[in-house]
Image 1: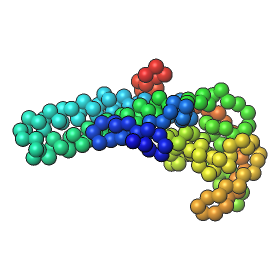
Image 2 (image 1 turned 30 degrees about the horizontal axis):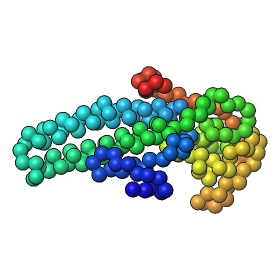
Image 3 (image 1 turned 45 degrees about the vertical axis):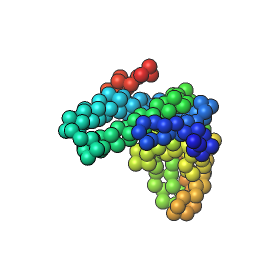
Image 4 (image 1 turned 90 degrees about the vertical axis):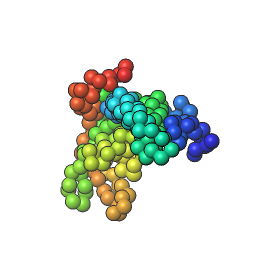
Length: 195
């Protein structure tokens, strides 16, 4: 089976995951990788055992052919196993970029960029991250987003034109910082680099 030109592997009951060659590395910050490892740990250590208990409980009710609880638990198991396979794949293909090793005023992956809207004077701050980490509400934009593509390679003081759904916007780059995101201590300790 093929998915977008890559082989597809079965990942649990009814779920399939696209398997990309290892050369298809996914850029990610350290904090993004740690979040994925935290999710994987929760899926394997909490969700999977919970579903196994639900299946065992449903089996104890007798006839499986008409047991809605059993079928619901098995379907949930398929979804969780598919997510585990997907997260494991993302972790395996992650290319972690150490943001703290960058310096200067040029915008690159992992940079935190302070911008000023040329029309309104409003200031915004974005951190350029991998696609899997993007969260606009937290000020994290994907490296593939239009604004990130317009910013990459530019420097402090540059004026940048960005095409947005609301029309063309003009921004000035106020500053560029390279700081790794602070993670909750429990997440960092639970899923450190060797996890």
